[in-house]
Structure formats: structure tokens, C-alpha cells
Image (cartoon, rainbow, N blue to C red; front, side):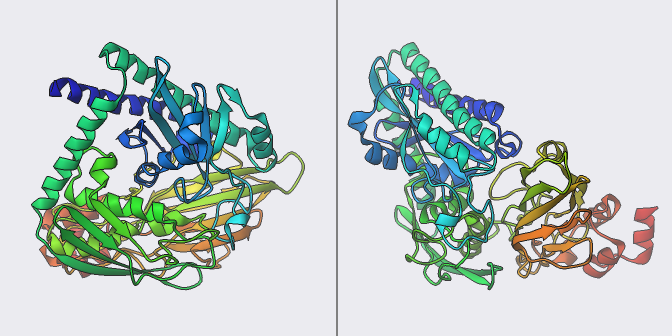
Length: 551
């Protein structure tokens, strides 16, 4: 019997992966189609997450694990009918900011509600100031959708559709994405009903109990094998107008791991605050990566990780704080958690990396007739931190897991030109294991256009720190082709013919650089990952070795 339940568990995972892939194939926004900034999951009748898609980002999936109970409460389970589709972008009951649309669909089998499907996608535009850090409150950041019906027994609420269309700059993309979210849930529901019929099972009750019990037991076994200990770590990051301190204390106890953020800076006046649901998502992700990475993600495998933060800190922001760029702070939460775990579990966690995605949004306007207005959002990455035993990954989005968008897809979305996109030599911190490299990018617009550039970067003044004697990664740099330096966060105007020059950060190194394998240093030199000057200064290569390697 347990074998059959294991097969059904695997089947649920394949169903939600098909659900996610359907969203990728049908979405309008490049953030979904090209970067995979989405999540998909299936839940039992009580709103507990049973399985998540492999495709997606932990900020969405782990946050969405808590979302369905909010829908159940706000909609009322007694009112739910086949054909219903529910929607919200509430940052505190969804996934942290208004640019994420969460859609929940009750799943029915033979007329009975057996569970729910939910999915989330980042949309390019939701009105307001646009995607950026400059808002002073949630009310400036876009159109708020409370938890409500998008469709009532198959009938779409066209009043809501009209309200959304008139309040956004990219209405076709937004409405297309919402329909794609609803459609992917419908595919999941169909596949679930087929599975229940095939296995002659009336509902998800037995398989839910099996999944949650097995996952909880496996996670508790991993925790039981750890030393009982407490460790504290702190990391200072750029913030908006002033630096922010992230402070966490991790404690391994009997049957649980706690992670408390007391001592962290208070809320910021600008849009970089983080609702608790997003802090919880990335703190849990860091703990799970280090302790139980192979146990499938669901409500029970996340349950033993208890995340707390004082209300009013930047990682537990209260309504109506501006939260548009909650990811820039949230993506640095795992590095802070790893700083504490490194004291408890030596040689387990990586050095600090770029952390925050190197995103930017370009709002293009024509300066002469025949031009095109458009909003173009692009996802990019710095370098990941070096790992115990391995170099850091170059230009890789950790912890978010989204994909770097191809230049061709970005340029297709609007009259933007990416003049340069390449790895940034010498940006990975030197160490026994080298930090991952960041990137160079050069961004402009086609003739006849100017644009506003919304920067969403960190690691400008606080680069990724190396671990155990290694060097830090290179810092982020933002400037114009005219020579002016710009800040890492905020919107600024770029005149026609001017370009934005970007240098994305590298990951910190791991271990003493003098212990790095000579062949690895020479290989880095041949590949152009490090310069001759750094090979000599950081690793002690002689001029003759360098000349031989470059011959």
C-alpha cells in the first residue's frame, strides 16, 4: 500500500510540474516565460501544501505554502463551487509584493471538493509608480487586489478585468498572465481528477496523511542528528538611503530549529521592506538547503523551521509599508542564516554571494513620432559564493533560482538594446575555492527613445564577504556612459543616446587563497576569469607561470 502511495506522491509532483510548465508556455510576461519567476502547488482540502513544482522560485513557493488558508477564510469554503477561480496580490497574504499575482482554484472530483491548486507569477506592471524602490507607501506601488473571485462558477468578473486594464501600463500582458494562471490551475485539476479515478480514490485524505507524516518524520530525523547549539550572525547591506543590519539567531532544539531576527534594522521609508511571509520563505529555504535538501517541499517538511521577527523590523514590515523590492532584502536572508549555520555545521554552507537578483526595469518613451512606449523588466545575476570543496557558480541566481533572461527576449519586449553582457573578470573573491563571477552589462535604447531606469541592486557598498580567510567578491557598480555614478536603488532618467553601464557583484571566496590548486588558478587565467595581476597578487603565480599559461 505504501508503494502505491509513494507512486501517487510522485504523480502529484509531476502534475504540479505540468501545471508550472503550462504557465510558462501561456504567460505573456517575459518574467514568467523566460526567467521562470513563478510557482505552482497542490494542496489538500485543509489547505496544506502537498507538492510543489520543480520549476519556480522559493520566495513564491514557500510563501504560497501559507496562502491557501487565507483564501479559505476570506472566500468561505462553504461558498466554493466548481468553476471558481480566486485571486489576490495582497503582499501579506500572498508572496510579499503587489507585482506577484496569486491565483487559487478549488479542486473538485465527482462533485466533491478534494483540495486546491495555486500558482503565482510576477507580472511586469501593476500600475502605481511602477516596479521600483521609490514608493513611500503601499498605496503608491500599484493596484491592490484583495482576495476575491476572479471567476464565479466559470463566469469571469469583467468589472475586475476592466479595472485592471485601465490602471496598468501593460494591460494585455497583465490580463493575459492572469488567464494563464487560471488555465494552469485548471490543467492541474484535470490531471488530479484523472489520477484519483485511476487509483479509485475518492479524495486526497489518505495520500495527504502519508505525504505529510513521511515528510515531517524525515525532517525531524535530520534535525535529531544535528548538535544542539545556538549561533548568531549579522550582515550589513546597502539599504536605500542608509545601511541595514540583518541579524539572526539560529537555535537547534529537540524537534525544531528556530531562527529569530531580533536586532535587525527597523522598517525603511522606501519600498524595500519585507512582509514576514517572505522572510519566512527564504529563512526556511536556507535551513532546508543546509539540513534537508532532498526532502520534498511541503507543509510538513517546512513545519519544524520556526521563523520569528519583531513586528516593525524591516523583515517583518507592517501594512501599509512600501514593499515593491522586498526581494532585494529577502534574497540576502539566506546568507545571514548561513553565517549562523557555519558556526554550528562547519564545512557545510557557502560563502556569501550576490544574493539579490540584479534586476532592472526600463520605462521607454518615444522622443519622436513612430516610437513605442513599453515597460521592459530583465532578470540578471551576480556570482554565487564559493562552496566548501567547489568554486562559486558564475552569474547564477542563488537563492532565487530564476533564470537569467536572454538578450534576444529582452530586446523583443521593447525598444531596448543590450550592447554588452559578459562575465566580469576578477569579480569572484579569491580563495581556496573562488567565488562566482558577476557580469558586465551595457543598456541603451533604440534611436528615438529615452527611458527611466529603475535600479534594484545591492552589494554596492557591502560586497559579498569571503569565508574562512578568503577574499570578498567585487562590489556592484552603476554609472552612465557620460561618467556619472548612480545609486544602486531608485529610478533615474536616461537621455536619448546615453547608456547605463552596470557591473554586477561577484561571490565571496572560501578558504585561504594560497591553498588553491595551482592548476585551477592557471585554468582561471586561461579562461579569463582572473587577470594576470590578480593571479600574481592573490595566488602567488610567478611571471613565467603566467606567461606560459597565456601563451
